[in-house]
Length: 509
Image (tube, helix red, strand yellow):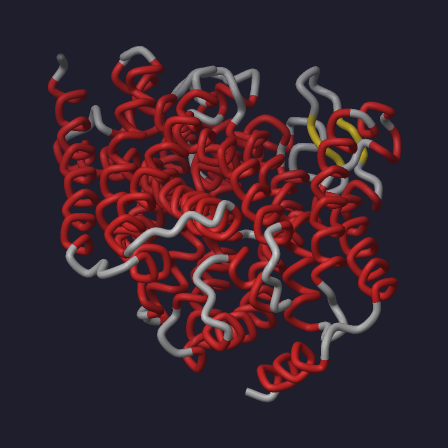
């Protein structure tokens, strides 16, 4: 093995060991499942902000987004980032405080818990529906993270994709099963710092090797539609104009935030809702800067290819390895740069792991707490609950590994579909539960099912009609989910006086 490869591997191994150590440390602080799944509501404002955004960005930030910008230019990547930036801010501004207060008031530790307690529902349909939706959409989401890790190690070290992906999954599962929510949140903070360093290193090195900033811009201008926000560059060298509807559908990425269980859990876990303003500012600023830099890295990457620094990519699956290629080149120029190359790779791992651990916890909590305990009525003591929680994390991870077997899948496309699924199902449900006193459990159930069904129907049937129908499935599915929720709630009538009284009490807090 070359000394360069050995050095990079050493940096990554040290980083992975650090993450596992964090899991070991926090494993001693998990006294019960409330600690394991929600950290006893002890998160500080900085950890809350950065763990929420690190778990949100996933491998999409350092692989999917630069890869998309490299292939098609600014339009799709930029409008997606703008939508996400707006969604991030509005989620922190409106949802965070109300959810923290409401979930603490009704003693909820998962999103299905919150919905069940919000509507004082003792049945099994609402909690089971919510939990199943989380499991259905989180498994492919988690699989995309495992796939990103597999691509990373396979590209870097020349090892087969499958064992590389499995080893990565094992490390993520190790610290998550030991440390739970607090370990995941703390490692997410560390990982957000590493991700930031990776972005900074790549953008500086990339501009230098591509011939300077002016050269990067000149190269991009040569490609039709590449720097435009109203048209996208095509693989055949041409471009395609964006309509207002297309832009609106891409901006709809921002709607997904209102329904992301792993982000909503961060809001529920902060120690003091009064500190959410600080968290909001930190999170919003970081997200805008990080996504802007990631997109520009994609543009820089094309100039690096034209300068002969890296090979020319012709499809999104390959272009998503851009930062991996940059790290390998960087590491050939001395010990210090080798460490920097290792940090880039650790950053890619960080953005992947920070999302995968949060998704594993959210999916596992829904299965063990809401399916096993609530829906199936199985009684577990505290020790048994902890064992069930950890076994569930492992089980979800195994399913994710099975779905990640194909190395040619696009990280961006998988995340896009799962994001739409959560946004359309939980987005309207959470907003109406938090801000409309006349929302009912029947409306909530019907809206989640309608949104979920429409995601599949639009993605695999309606969008194939082309034209105005070829838009991001989240937008129409979110609208349908909201309309059905409101219509059914109005049909069944106002909820009980007790439910409305609790809503007004929380509203006044």
